[in-house]
Image (cartoon, rainbow, N blue to C red; front, side, top):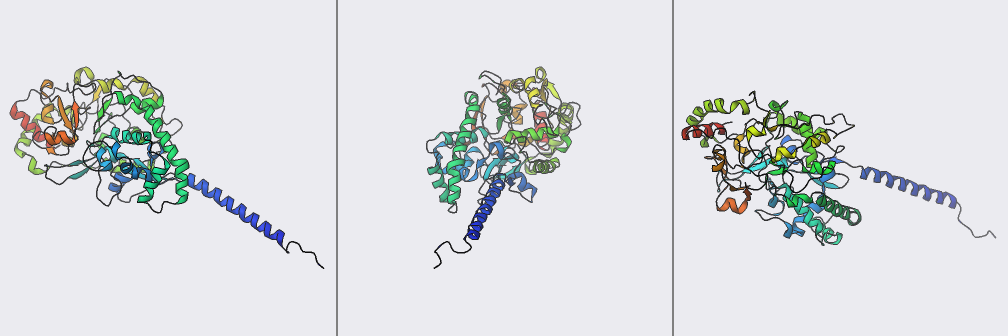
Length: 485
């Protein structure tokens, strides 16, 4: 009788199973490598949409996992700042329509999971209304005078410090808005994504702790180079100069090429200016999306600033104001002017010196090390003698005025410094076409706006006394002409 044993071919079967397991393991490893190297931005065919929602690579250092970002305002509503609107609108983000889940200025990139980052439009988009009852219109490439970047990051920090910032709370909230959030996703978020996000946010809050003891930015402003100093190890004290400045307009860039850029004219390289802004938004040396950034830059080259609606311009006064402008302003503020794009010494311009003082020679040297080993390494940063003279194209939408946004309207700027408002409110979107600036006083401006106090360090509204000697009629003529720039 034949003994009972393993069926014929058993060795072949075992080898087949082992081979299959090896194949599965290899495929899993390949998938893992592919997954963790995944770097896929959301793209847009229309360049306007690309500016509003396209990635510039900022998700690398400042990206927030999309599904967590989406539920934070609901889970941690008590940490939202006061203000109009819901969720991220409270920080000045602009939602284009109800169909858009994300606001303008946010991008999406799978790296490897979907991350929300900031792009150029976050700081360079605004809403304008011609009256309290008028429909709002969105303006691209302008100064984002309503966006409060400090409030945005403070909200993220507050959420991370909350005891409820844990896997159970967040995954439950995510599954309410995304029932397809899988068990595998849950494991990844529970054990990797959520703990890592909490750790990174708390570390970033610690790095930026000094800002809490300094004057708040307020909407439309940022201490541009503070984060750079933290990164390169330049330690500051609470009493050191405050470098907070207004967000600039970025349209019509082609004629600006070759000028000294930034408020103090510390760099004349167009490319370095763009790359440093991308770094400020959260990109790293290796994550910058150069193709995306180039596409935005080329679009901005010839983007014309919006014009003041004709019904708000007195053409006869504007015609008379042209001669005053040519005689009193053009050399510093017209393309081709002798002093445009050049720095006026701080003793001559007389405006608040804090921003100028805060950018040091040491910082310039450190910035010129950024990108070392890359073909685009910075080499053009320098310390200047004062503040740069900027072209005035689209000046009506640059309010508030001066580098630190300390003067609410052009009418106020053309007054002697001691007659300019000491306290006003910024961030309200209704425009005052008579004074040429956003409405900055009154009940509604106070309700929705940020209280700006010019006596606070870095907020001074003195200096730039040019034009303060004009007669009443000359002032009206010049204001009407400036609306047409």
